[in-house]
Structures are given as C-alpha cells and as structure tokens.
Length: 320
Image (cartoon, rainbow, N blue to C red; front, top):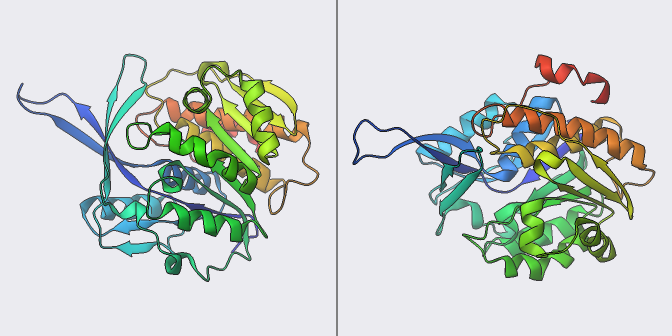
C-alpha cells in the first residue's frame, strides 16, 4: 500500500433524487450512492490517491449498490464491515439553483453502529491521513468510538475533519458541544459557509478561524460557494476564487473539495504528521486544485467527482 494512502471513515448514504413521475399520484426517485465520507473516498480514489474506506455497509439493495460504486472507483473496502442493519436513505429536493434540501431515513441504520472491536487493531502504518466527519461523529452509539479511533490515529497520521452539519438529523448544539474537542484532534478542519452559520451564527469567517485555531486545528478552510474559499494556516489567511461553471447541482461539491485538497497535500508529501513545514503558498495551490475538482462535481448530477484523466482536470495538472 502506498505511503500516500488516506483512510476515510464514515457513512455511505443512498441519495434519492426526485424525478418526474408518470402519474400525478406517484413519486419517482433516482438513487445514487452518496454520503459525505463515501463521496470523499470516491473522489480521492478517482484522483489517484490510494483511499481506504472504513464503513459499515449493509447487505441490502442499497448496500450492494454502495459496494459496486466504491469498488468501481478504486476504493479499498478490505476493512469495511458487513453490517446486518439497513442502509441510510436521504431524499434530496433540488431548488432552481441546484441546491439540495435533504430529508433523512436514518433510524437504527448501519452507519452509526460502530463498536470498538470493529476499529481495533487496524494497521495504519501506511496511512498518511485519516479523514472523517459528518454524521459519523455525532450519531450514537458509534460517535464516541470514532472519536477514540481518531485519538489513536493522530499519533501517526494527519487528522482531517469535515463537520458537515445535518440539522434535520442532529441538532447543531450537538456539533457545537463537540467541535472544540474535534479541533484538538484535528490538523485540518474543512467546513462550508452553511456549516459556519449553523455552528457560529453571525460570526465572520476570519473570527471563526481564530476560534478553531485556538482550539487546536492548524489549517482551517471554509468553502464559500460561488465566493471561493477562505484558508487560514495558524492565522495566516488567503482567499481562493471559485471556478466558474454551469451548475447542475452542488451535491458532493464540498466532499470533492476536501478530496482535492488532501490529494494535493498527499502528493507533495505534506501529510503524515502535524503539517510541519506546510506553507501558505502550498495551501493556496491545494485550494486552487480543490476548487477545480469541486466545480467539475457541480457540473454533473449527483455526487459524481471527476477522474484524474478528465480533460478539464488535466488542465490543472501542474497543481496536482
């Protein structure tokens, strides 16, 4: 296994999108594999970074779809758990701008049932970075197990966290109560402007960065949609503009941004510890590449990140 390997831990969710039905009293759904951590693992693998996904995958129709999708993208599932519980379902409604509003069907599903035994004894010797976040960090009973795993992994790997707040499933207060602890575990914190507004309402992004630096996170990146991204490394800041694109929907864009960021840092040998030696110029390069990956994800339906040989991505090969 490559020393550039990134291990991603978290959920894989069936994203169901509404489509025109043949009758007025019917609802047609198109189901695609999704879930923030799964999207990140897929995007990493497609970019060429060895990605191992730690997930609890159901044996139901959705779980089989997940496995096919992840393996087709080159994700390593050798440590995925075959779960007895059903898969999580998220139904997405898109507005006129391609923004998705989700309703979740997630009670007692496979993704949240982690036990210490399932994560014990994992070989992380070839893992440069562990990335997690989203619901895996806040849904019990598994959330505490995931935090314990991160504490262990941080002894040798860079830790990346994306809170990916889902207020319909978990109240933002739960995220707020744990965020300082996550920052103490994390080297990289990536979140969206929507996450920021839910976690620290009315707080300017720069002030939020300082708050999270004080709690322990060295690199904080806030993605701002059409306004690009704000990156803060130990309080030194820069802004990177968004890439203009024809948006189909924004599903998976933040996850792809995170993958582009981690991929770039991994290929430069910057992962594997506490980001020692990382400079603002490299952060800028990584963010520029990440915005390109995110824009290509927005240009197609659903969480469908680009492959490394995609022409539009090759145009930025010098940044990758």
